[in-house]
Image 1 (cartoon, rainbow, N blue to C red):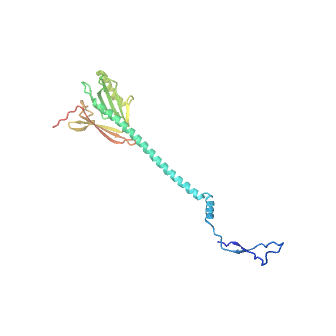
Image 2: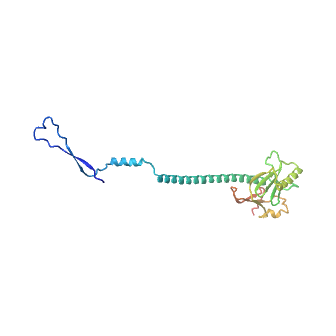
Image 3: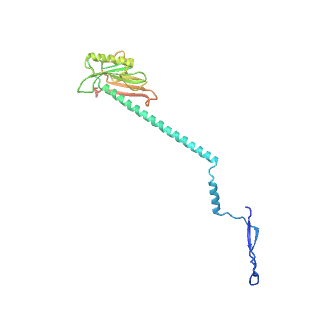
Length: 256
């Protein structure tokens, strides 16, 4: 540190007599200047200097670093929120697909449980693409018959049901209408779930056989069991093969 000048005050000697002559002022003390040790800064002075330096604000580099950190945090937050939104959307689509599938399979089981055999009327028919059923109504107070058709156009699983039937002629017309509806993919049915394809198997004589092998020779009676295999396409909430077995409620199994 640079040495600083400091003042040295030297006292004026007093005269030996009783005082200064009358009418004369006392001479002013003489001051001598000399080089001395550097003046040291106190703690208060250092704090004041630091406060002034802090009051100047951020530098350009500090500001750029802060902006880069904020941009990185914003990007990470956006990716996290986007992943959460995608997950919620996928879960919601899957839940909707599961509910729709459950409703479709419940209707499928209800139709099979209500199959009825009549004279001169087919109870079930499968041609490799369309399944037609003759079933009774669910209202026991007003008995009625219905013809139901299940089919797939290669993209969706669909169901059609006729109005209530009371005569043999009405049944025949409804039976023929069910076949033509499935072939023409006409309106009036209910579209259920996305479906790429489906297969049926009959359980007869203690074994599962493909229903398609006997399509040329229609089955006249109700099989002991029916196996449904659905091939659901990807991207529909549910995908892959699904197997559902049905057993005739009136089936009697021997204990031997």
